[in-house]
Amino acid sequence: MKNRILIIDGPNVALKYIALKSKINVEVSILKQIAFFYQKFKPDEVYICWEGENSRKPRQNILKEYKANRHKISNQRNAMKKANNMDMGDIEQQITLFKTKLFKNLPIHQLFINNLEADDVIANLTRIHNEDNIIIISADADFYQLLSDNVIIYNHLKKNYVTLKDISKEIANPFNFIWQKAIVGDKSDNIDGIKGLGIKTFQKIFVDHLHKEEKWKPNLIKEILIKNGKEEFINDILKNFRVIQLFIPLHALASLEVKAFCEANGKYKFDNEEIIKYFKTFNNFDFTKNNLKLILIPFAEFMVRKTFGRK
Image 1 (cartoon, rainbow, N blue to C red):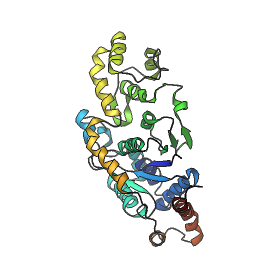
Image 2: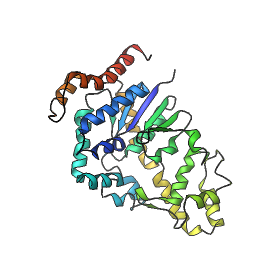
Image 3: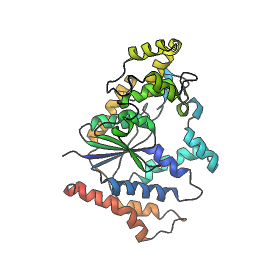
Image 4: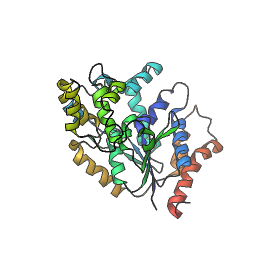
C-alpha cells in the first residue's frame, strides 16, 4: 500500500502567520495550522522544508538578477514587513524559533540543506517518494512542474487543491509550465521574460503544442521563437529555464544529502512535556489543558498510526 507523504513549504506557510504577528500569537496559530494538516490528511510521513544557507547562490550564478529584488526576503515577506513594521532580522528570528524550538519537539522531519532552496528540497523529496502519494502544502505555483498522478498541491491560502487534471486544461505536461514562466517572466523572482509577451500571446504562439503531453525540448522553443521574430531572446529564455526548473544539475550533491537525510531519519521524536513547557512561556496565551489538547490530539493520533499502522 502506498504511503501518504505530507510535504510542507515551511517559509510559505510560516510567513502567513508572521504577517499577523501584531494580532495573533504566531506560535500557537501556526501549530494549530500544522495540527489541522495532520488531522485533514492523516499522513504516514511529514516533512517541513526550509531554506538552506546560500540557497540562492547556484541560481544567482546562472542569473545574477534572480531574486535580487527581494533583498534576502521575498516579495511576500516585503509586503508583510510593511504591514507589521518587521525587518528581515525579526522575520528570520521568528522562523529560527519555529525550526529550533516549536517544531523540534513534534513528529515532523525538518529539512534544510545548504545551497538548496525549500522548493528544491521538496522537489527532491517527490523523487525519493516517487512511489507514494504526495501532498505539497504551498501557495507557490512553481510546484506545478512537480504535479503528477501521485503528486498534488494543497493551497493553504485559497484552501483548494491543484491537481494534474486542473493544470492540464492550460498545458498538458506540467513540466512545460517552466517554459511559460521562462518566456513570460516571473516578477516575484525578478526574472524578465520577453517584453510585451504575456500569457495570452504565449498561449497563442504555442497553441499547437499546449495540449500535447510531451516535454518541450529547447529546439522546439528556438523554432517557435524564431518563427515569431523573437530569436534575439533565445539565450535569455534558455537561461531563465535553467533557473526556474527544480532539480537543476548544480544541486546533484545536495540532492544526495536529501536522500541521506531520509534514510537516516526514520524515527520521530514527540515530546509532550517539552511542548507543554514551551507553551507555558507565552504570557499572552490563555494556557489551559483543553486548549493544548486541541493541538496535541492530531499529533498523538499520528503517533498511534505510526506505531500500530494506518487506519
